[in-house]
Amino acid sequence: MSDANNKSSLAVPVAIVISALIIAGALYFSLGKKAAQAPSANNAPAKVVKVPGVQKNDHILGSPNAKVVIVEYSDTECPFCKAHHETLNKVIEKYGKSGKVAWVYRALPLEQLHPKAPKEAQAGECVAKLGGEGAFWKFINKIYKETPSNNKLDLAKLPEFAKFAGVNVTEFNKCLDSDYGKDIIKKHLDDAIKATGGRIGTPHNVLLVGDKQIPVAGYLPFENMDKLLNQLFKQAK
Image 1 (cartoon, one colour):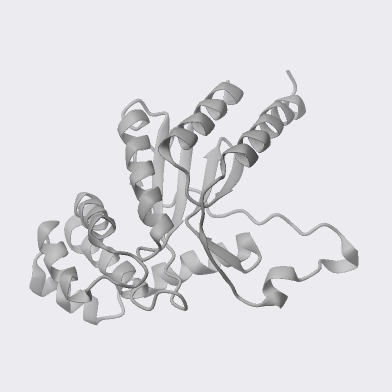
Image 2 (cartoon, rainbow, N blue to C red; image 1 turned 60 degrees about the vertical axis):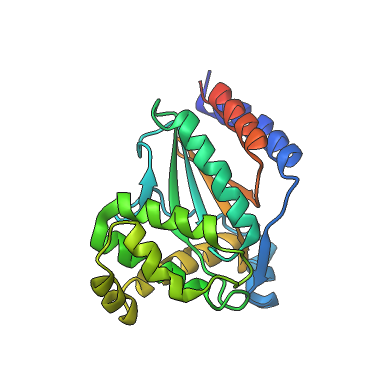
């Protein structure tokens, strides 16, 4: 089968599956009508902007060479992200060890909606710096488990969560008081703005399948994500 036919056979069923499965929600913030609706020159179709593939400083569970890599942009105070975090943990539990699926987590705090989220995102980067990836995932799982969402987490609990993840609290507090991690988080924001035209939603997922990128906006229950992944496994053969 030719490359063109391969692409067609993958794209059409996947589009149908995604349309059928995205039934839950996301929190959206628009950076203005100009950013979200800017027409392209000469009314030509707007160029599709991809998000960066797996980067060396990414937080990743599973193999970067997995058949499907789920790149998630997430806000720790978004209630849909809280539910989606549980979904992706189940996905990795089922498909991570076999090398079928990997999960890349990128913080995308929507400060205009959740003023506490940027500090929580920075805290995650500090934990990763001080304790490594194992500590990061333990910390970020703890935040999503404990937060009531919608900007209601008590930030005084962050050092407690860092200690739970195995990080020295004194060093964590020093890091949190600095600007560490802010440049990483801003890069995620800039990439998401380019890829979405300024209308940013969380959770925002981009499924990397070979050289293809399939955006999936919003939270999916595990059963729906599982169906989507199995469709991708079949089409990618």
